[in-house]
Amino acid sequence: MQQHYYNVIIIGGGISGTALLYELAGYTDLDSIALFEKYPALAQINTNGRNNSQTLHCGDIETNYTFEKAKKVKRTAQMLSNYAIRHGYGGKHIHKFPKMVIGVSEEETAFIKARYERFKNLYPYLELFTKEDLAGIEPKLTEGRKEDIVAMGALDEYCAVDFGAIAETFVQNAKTMAKGVCDVHLDAEVYQIDKLGDKFQLLTPKGKYFADYVVVDAGAHSLLQAHKMGYGKEYACLPIGGSFYYAPASILNSKVYTVQNDKLPFAAIHGDPDILVDGKCRFGPTALALPKLERYRENTYMEFFESLRPDKSVMKVFYDLLADEDIREYVFKNMMYEVPGIRKGLFLKEAKKIVPTLSEKEIEFAEHVGGLRPQIIDKKEKRLLLGEAKIDTKEGIVFNMTPSPGATSCLGNALKDVELIAAYLGCEFDEKRFKSDHMDEEEAMSQPYVMPGFAASAS
Ligand SMILES: Cc1cc2nc3c(=O)[nH]c(=O)nc-3n(C[C@H](O)[C@H](O)[C@H](O)COP(=O)(O)OP(=O)(O)OC[C@H]3O[C@@H](n4cnc5c(N)ncnc54)[C@H](O)[C@@H]3O)c2cc1C
Image (cartoon, rainbow, N blue to C red; front, top):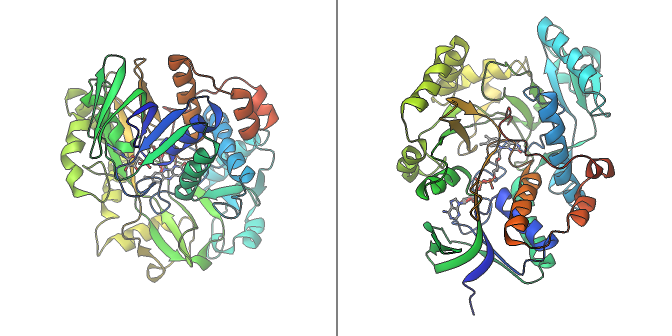
């Protein structure tokens, strides 16, 4: 018989929701949990490997992360790679190949050298590569390049992840480890959530369901759900699309990131081998504000306006962003990268910073590839927040908004939710076993996990 009551219901079958299902099933004594996903399969939106950059962001080559942010993401990235290796997914869903960030002007090369000195103790495997080293490691970076180039990076670290496949494994492992009921309802959109006494009632196409605690991991839809229930009115959602360009796989063997312009709110483009499409490498993502909550569904325009809730504070954030000449140029350029006919030539200029000899005939716009980052605007502070955000109502429901590096941080973000759930419901959480399964000894002994949110994002 179908069950209609659960201790905890998770909304959203991307990597955030499935990671939470895995942690609750494997490491708490809860005996009835469920996940609801609106599509017929898991991980169809941003978690799908086609739609994100497939990078395990651990902070070593992301120059838009401060040292403090890097320490935090290192911890959560390590949880994901330890999980994957422990379960035998190395070489299957998580891959090793060279990774680096390059500096190409005098200013950038000095920056990379200084950053290497500051970060090398945090990441002992990091190396500094000269132009001669790079000619051997990744020849296309130096061919035809007149100016100097240096890079910091590593040759043999796990750095590329099929986040969609990992989400699937979270569900398989949750079902194996669960002590009681662990249901996954597909094709089950949650239309409405209401608090009735001390329970939550969820309306779905399959009927009404009830829970003591609800976690909304619905990506760009999380804030909309919060607004519908009267929470998070101080936030608005600005969805930023990211497109990619394909090139032949022979162009790059490594993940190659570029130095971030600090003024720009979104990460600089990178190039890397596509782990899901044979024979291709990708350059991107671009950054384009789009008036919808799902990249490839036109019927989410209205939902966009409901979750943006434009008012004076939102307009002030837009005004401040666009008042800066560099940002205006960046926004305009990124719009042009989508316009058929001219986009290839324009994007090529950007990609040539990585591969100087790249030609227009070697690149093609990757159709239907790239998702949307649900960036959050703090209306009170009148600023764009970067990184993940959480609305903890302290009333038995939590809403997670997860732009990059949300996929990398999924186990760390879920851990925070497990702690909130354990405190609210009074259930047991075997933190010691969780840490010993997912963290290196030194990390497990260090200070408690702090959510990395509201810092710079990378994709
Ligand atoms: C271009 C781009 C590049 C990126 N690159 C990286 C990267 O390299 N590394 C990294 O760590 N992160 C990256 N990210 C971010 C990463 O993709 C996201 O942080 C992550 O996928 C978020 O996972 P999620 O489960 O929270 O959301 P999603 O994957 O969006 O999943 C949300 C789920 O909720 C479901 N849902 C929504 N509403 C309902 C409802 N009412 N009822 C039931 N189900 C519902 C959706 O169908 C969906 O399956 C990138 C993002 C973009 C857009």
